Image 1: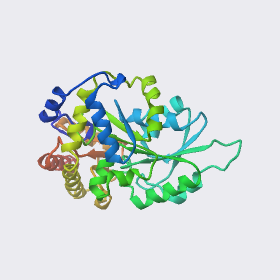
Image 2: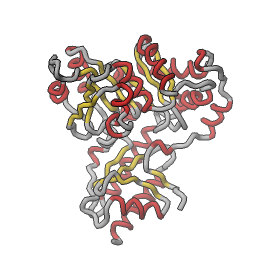
Image 3: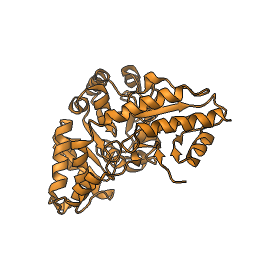
Length: 346
């Protein structure tokens, strides 16, 4: 059956007609020669938004992370990150292959670890140990349920990193969700890290792309890695135009996605056997505990899909739903009703 309500991820968004029109009419040139004006405009726009000196447009968020780790780390260095981090779970061990660095996972709560945990994870200067080179933050924490890292916590970890001469990097795939949810500016969040990127292809609704930002020197070093990884493009302004449109029109509307996630959480919490803490729904990601339900997460997911509704199963006990601009309030309510009928009829 065709999927009509897709809550699998905010990566399922499709460009609107207005975004497509912006793409078609984009002024383009050779990106690698620095001749694509739309790409340069997007990069300048993101650098300004994040309060950084320069930025680089690349095809994906994963490439942003891989480039950052490759620039910052030497072979054998260690990166500190929460155990739920994207760089651990969803990048095909890229850190080990490309940067040739290892990652030390921390056991945070909902994807967020403490200053004390980070401090304890930093290695002493010992020739038998790897060198602690980077502290990674994922804003928001995806597998933590879209948790927003508080600014004060980031500032404290930033201070710790500075004391120990360690780079701090932010996987900002959903940074703008955190901005809308917290009222803290993107520049203030980004001031706590050396490098940061935002994803264009999630809640912002673009078909492709991420933008990595940092100092001019960092971006200079990032360019050869973009080339090595196959991320250099030609008339990339067609894609960059979608990013410019999204930044101009789709940031504030993320609040609608957050509200819909709250409606989804409240509705699902009323179903017998479903456990959801509505207080942990910070943004647009919802973790659904079905451990006490009569069906497993995989079974519920399959039955929903038969009705044209897609919510992914993480494992047998947990599902993840993500609200976005292609699913409205009515769609969320319909998903809740279908979920309830499936659970109550078995």
